[in-house]
Structure formats: C-alpha cells, structure tokens
Figure 1 (cartoon, helix red, strand yellow):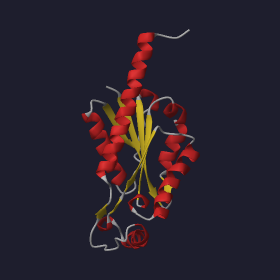
Figure 2: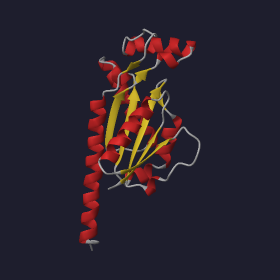
Figure 3: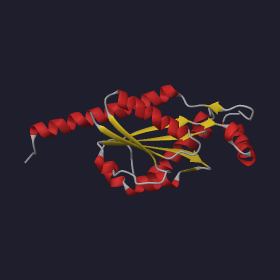
Figure 4: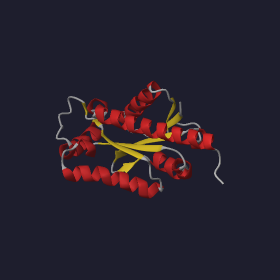
Length: 195
C-alpha cells in the first residue's frame, strides 16, 4: 500500500468531483489517499510525506488556478522524485473540434513550462456547465463559451461532459505507476546500496 496525495483546484466543482472519484478508486485498490482543495484555507501537507502525488486543475478564462500553479512550482523538486500525475478539466476537452482539442493540450504544455514539473501521467477530461448555479453575467459568458466548445446553450439545464471511462483509465495508469515504483523501491531495499 502506498500513500497518495491528491491536491487540486476547482472553480465550479467538476475538478473536485474528478479528484473524489480518483481518490475513491485508488483507495479501493488499497492505497492510503489524502485529498486537499488547494483553494481552501489551511495548511497543505508536504509532498515529501507521500509516496506519490496527483495534482488536478481546471481551466477558467484560459488559465489554471494560481494556487495549483504555485503548489506545483513550490514542490517541483519533490514531485520529480516520486511518481506523480496531473489531470486537467476543461470545456476544450469536450469539443470534437481539433482546434479546441489543441487548446486543451496547449494548456497542459503551458502548465509544464510554467511550473517546471513534468508529471509521469497526464489526463485531460471534459468538464461541466452548471447554468443553474450561475448568475446572469456568468450564465451569459458561459453560453458564449459553450457555443464554440459544445453548442449547449440551453441555459434551462446543466451539462456534464466528463467521460468517466477516461478518468478510470487515468486511475489505472496512476495505480500501475505507483505499484511499479513500489516494486522498484522494494528491489532496491533487498539488493542494498550499490558500490
């Protein structure tokens, strides 16, 4: 069993929903999982206290949450020394338009460049539109964004685009990465230090 820290930022709750799913599935596979919304006040655990780390962020107005970018920058050395994964939630990932898909990939590349962290596993998931939770101005803005991304501009209902099978594949990749690293660490302990 490995200890896994899931740190995330969420704007409207879909990234939190994905993080909860990832945490539940990894715990079901025997890992001890700690989650933390980086946007909430309070102390954030040190990356060094965990065997592996998963970081999640959503895209709003073309950028990831500052708290997630700051976290990855601050802990990039610790993230580089253990299995690590990153997932991104965006409406661009919901689109079938190649240009929108390219935007989603570009956001990940910009995150890597800005933070200096290169995660072992990366997942990109479609988000959600919750018109019922928006005020007038935000509803208006989201309808304009949705027109290009998904075409779903009927504000009388909410839309969820996340493909949970894609998220399950991400969980599988993280689990395999953590298990592979745990076996390698065990082998190093059995063999002892090399001279």
